Image (cartoon, rainbow, N blue to C red):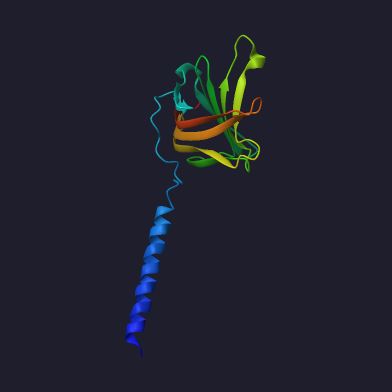
Length: 178
């Protein structure tokens, strides 16, 4: 009846479909497979703590998997002589992304500055924290029976003084100890 109007409606519909497809594709940037494995050397955790490099000692770095009552917990830890990073995923389901958020306190990460001479003065920054919302993510990109690799980043808070630390460019490549 009105061929020019039908053509215009088709053109507009096609444009919406194309724009919708582009928006959908560009919003799928989060990796469900855990992303790349990062660049940590074998047996270490690396990260930047407020911009300063952290690399754990191989002898003090490990991962452990424990299953009880059909629930698996992954613990990862790496220490230097003056710092430590710990990450715990309760309800671990293998390769994938695990969000650090105050809506799920079963996935946690910590940055610690131990005081060897006076352990009571050790300082700990935790993620998530009260009213934090989403403060980071742990991405497990590869797991074998003996090794686990991935990346992480988070913002953590010290409950003693309210200070925060930004843990960025984190990567782990750890032996699984069982």
